[in-house]
Image (cartoon, rainbow, N blue to C red; front, side, top):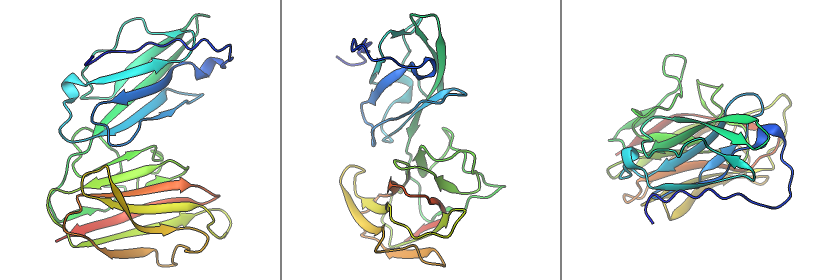
Length: 243
């Protein structure tokens, strides 16, 4: 049923530490990527999910599951136009704060230019047009920082484009070769993807770090994803998409 909320107590006998209580899943109708659930020991834990532009955030169709012996004082409402703060309780009397971000990806007109800096920090909010990220390092506001595997960054456009340019900079204390997997993909609908390029042990990041691609006129989404991380963090910036 629409808007059915699932509160599932998983009776497995597994023991979770005090800070790990909370959500085991969070699913949204119209999500473009499965929600990322991050348990944070010192501070509020985080759920992030990117949804398509036609999703009604004031009346969100979603469901979730809680870990064993966890509960909410009240059911969540359906308005996710702003990040939602919620407290999850355990039967032992402990509690944990969570913040749920449902990020609607609103397509931008061309040219789309994203140059993050101190004067233009990479802080996402509900007014942002053209981009959204999942699990990016919010402490690094002058770039899009990929600090772990599973981090992804999306851009969306509303008209045909021909040229894509961006800059990728590997970051580490020691100069090491890249043996992880970082991919750049394009999509017509945000669901089916084609690999534009990938970086791995056989295809290292260039010293200049500036990459240029020709785009199919049907492309409406571009996505960067850190699939498998080694010791390198990766910074993304200076994105330009033009006709």
